[in-house]
Length: 308
Image (tube, rainbow, N blue to C red; front, side):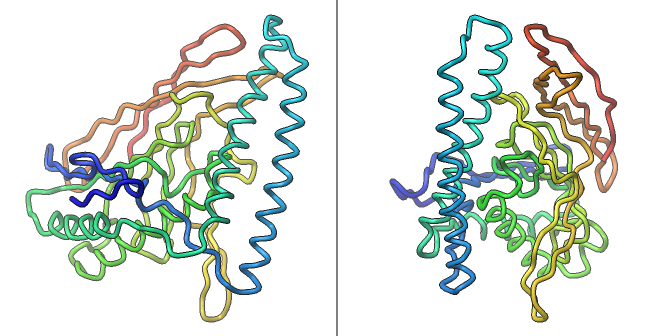
């Protein structure tokens, strides 16, 4: 594999595939295809650039206000320590937003996309579908293409990963034709990055990434995050011949993250166990595992397992 210092981080076997129990697993390095595309050199692109710059100034002011409040709080007092933790979480989120904005503003030319890896995935998926003993396919990588965690769902890199993965799936579908019938290209996508535990399923997106189950397990990361206020339905805007259209592309059916209940701030840390059932296509038993911190106490909580 090529190694490009300062551009791509390339360790041995940084993307690879293996087969176990009749299922092909594909590990990807999404850091090399998550850079946002450049803003268009149009009036619309310039307006969006100005909006990004305005948003950057707004969150800079918000950051300064939060830092000022933090300076006046005493971490030795339980109630103020809880407030400090909440404000620190907001500062983390602000930093992520700033990084995402800077990536978009800096994208003056086409990003260095790792097409070598994407082409490898395309060819390996086609090979997998043409292997009779394979009954299913699972892909796992860091950045989720679909997510409703508040700081991640509308990040430019989220859309970049979605569009480049969709680009691969479209070419796989074109090659396979009727071989895939009513099945999705892959049976399950596993991700981290977002500080939550979430299950989503794509709808009929109009592309080859339709009807795919996605599990995000990043809820053991530093400070669980809230779900976005806009709700569980993910909408995407598409440029078409007749103009722009917006339609639903995914539904979130489970979200475990930071939340408030009876004026208490609750921090559920989570992971997930996935068991694979026999059969073709395979079914997966999803078992959420959760421990929740409420003030200074920890509580184990159980959610019912479900099959996808």
